[in-house]
Image 1 (tube, rainbow, N blue to C red):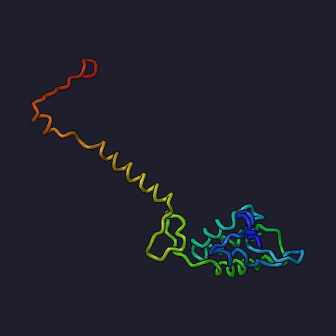
Image 2 (tube, helix red, strand yellow):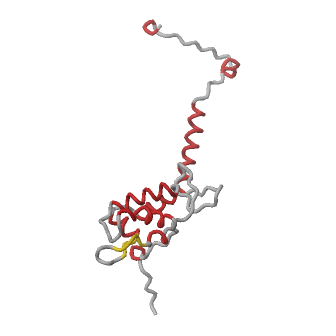
Image 3 (tube, rainbow, N blue to C red):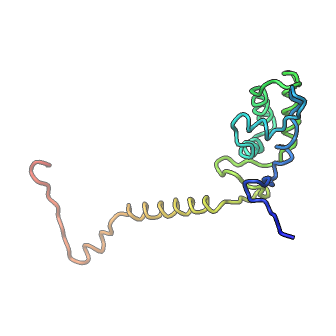
Length: 162
């Protein structure tokens, strides 16, 4: 039997957000269930990126944000007054996270530990190196060594600059 594994463009992304993304928002006018992943795609929003952003927000803010997104969709068989409850139900399906401002996606790291990607590590290393060489270049000249060597240089400015 030949192994017919699907190429990556045709496989489902297995992520911690699947429970949220494939949950139903509600029934559409044609009788089909509308999932979060379909709704976000229709709004031209990357579903996994949006799920990650929502997971990093406090639940109340995430629910309000999702509520606004659901309100932008064509109306299904749910009432407009139902959208806050739908959003709150869906937000409960997101993984629990502690968000740290400015550190980006923590990828499910344990509280108190920070997990950096390779690119973030390289950027931090480049910044530290840059700071090191910047401070090294701004050091004051060592005057003791130059006078001990017997070199006495005096600089005089031209008459126009005095």
